[in-house]
Length: 393
Image (cartoon, rainbow, N blue to C red; front, side, top):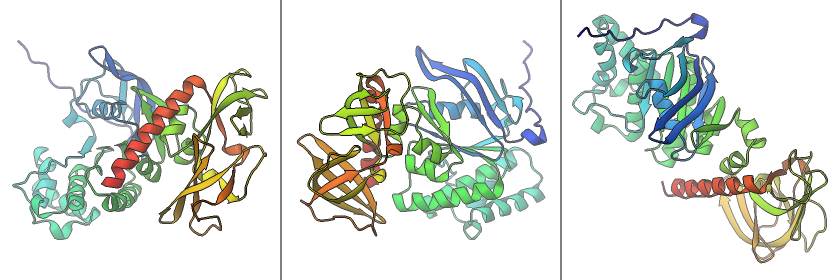
């Protein structure tokens, strides 16, 4: 039998080098769609994060890009060229995983040089490129150490250097900071973003951490059930969520329930009336709906009662200092609490038991129908679970 040669690595067009495109890509495992018809373009030199809960399809998407999985439908383009049939080692892509997979018997420099030697890079070039890569990640002084002599953050830098030494047009990162403690993770977020900005390499970054994605990315793609719910820059996706799931998953929300009036603009609930800045299309007046308001959009003052639109009165029952911000929980009636976040320097009530009035602007109100409300509640639960896990890290 004649053996078919492996597909050659495509030659990128200069202006397209680093561009990534998925066109109606799907990947099934049995009857389950891990990736369900994704279409997405990542621009050359962009830092894009795939964000979502466990099982949403983000890692499978990354594996499809890397060539570790093959799509059942659709097309993948890297640097303007289709990569169907091109094996992982022939693609102009490298991957960094959460488990850094450093060779324990090799030094830092030998680990970084491994990929170059596999590609038969001339010896003189290997030394120069390893030195450059270690310098990029500030690990030159550790070149002769073994991985077990390094901290978690240092091992992560070595894994980055090993991935970048081949000068790929695209770097894929699958939860690379997940094994680090919270303080080191935040430090590495800054370093990673600065490195990407200097190199101008396309980064596709997988994470379930909302703060991480918002802090580092040029754009964020929120995924759920193998599909992209929304893709936008961090400000737009946080301030203007297009779906209830995105609204609930990114940051925290206060939920108010009632019936809608005024052509989808007003919610009349139990002891509260919410009004949005604009009408909500597709929701008939009289329908059961949910209004969402972010904690940082709410202002708070001492007061006994209120009848104004977009305001509630209650008692301050909890105050938590979170560095530059302060989190307040206000009990409103028997079954409702309102979460408020203020700056540490704001002049607001801090004493537990104080009667307060909370107010918020029309521009902060998002209205969702009953079906979407369930998705927002699910997303909020996932966010709370993650906050608990992060706090214990």
